[in-house]
Length: 73
Image 1: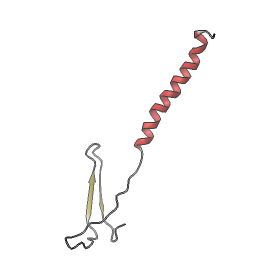
Image 2: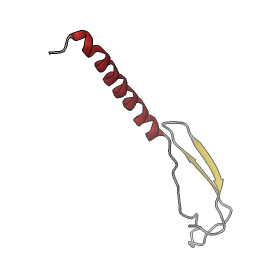
Image 3: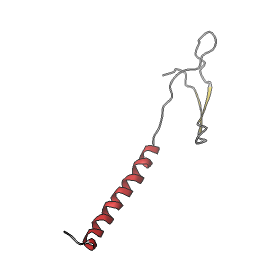
């Protein structure tokens, strides 16, 4: 049976690898992009080109403003 002192470096390396994985996986999940598609229409369901669109995430405070293109996706 190996002595306790010979297992310390192995357990240290195992802990370090676990910690690195635990930290890097959530960080990777937070980096991403999203796409919103659709169109803005009037009551007659005609597309309104140049309509201003604002999107806000209340949990993070992130906000993005844009102008709709001539043709929706």
